[in-house]
Image 1 (cartoon, rainbow, N blue to C red):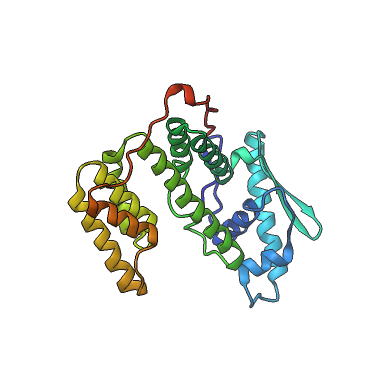
Image 2 (cartoon, rainbow, N blue to C red):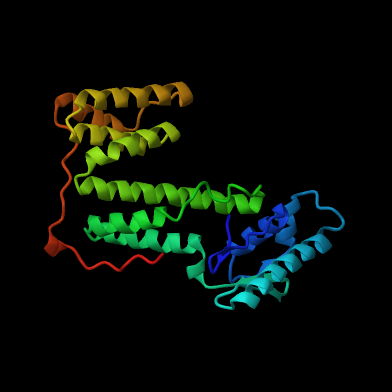
Length: 264
């Protein structure tokens, strides 16, 4: 997690202060009760001084924000005391996670409307907001971990939508290196394997596509004792029969609607 303002990095250095800020950020503009904060930071074994210590973390965050406001008061977040806890007030546009979600929804809508070119551009803008795994520098507790899992799933969804858009645009060859990497990092994700097989087929590499299917079959059998899904077996039969997956259809200009410009 990184906090910047007017070009200056003002991320808290202390782990639990940074952890507290992350929890407030992911529940921005909503009341976060003190019990939830204590549960997140200490789990089932909070110290007797947990409440006082947590209040100290809030004080340190307020001090950071006040120092930033002294230099430039534009859009500086504020932590307000609101029974039974606190609320972090800020605009959604200043939180990359919120901008990512908005761009993801825009990209999905553009793809559903038959506009893969603008969908691909919008989804790329969303994915460029990521610099690594969600909150990788914070030892998330059980409450924050749910948010981390949620955003990791959204990132996979955005990747999938952008790959679909690029495939519809006939970019199979350009997708191959990325798909090989995704298959390596997500070996149990059948969808990524399927997209690799389709991209190999579309570029005339039917033999490698068949090898990719067999690799998936071995992984599922060795790791889970399962066979590929019905959809993957159907794709395999298409490869064996020489039919292959259908070629992507690129929408013509008159079928597309104007797209809103992505906001970074």
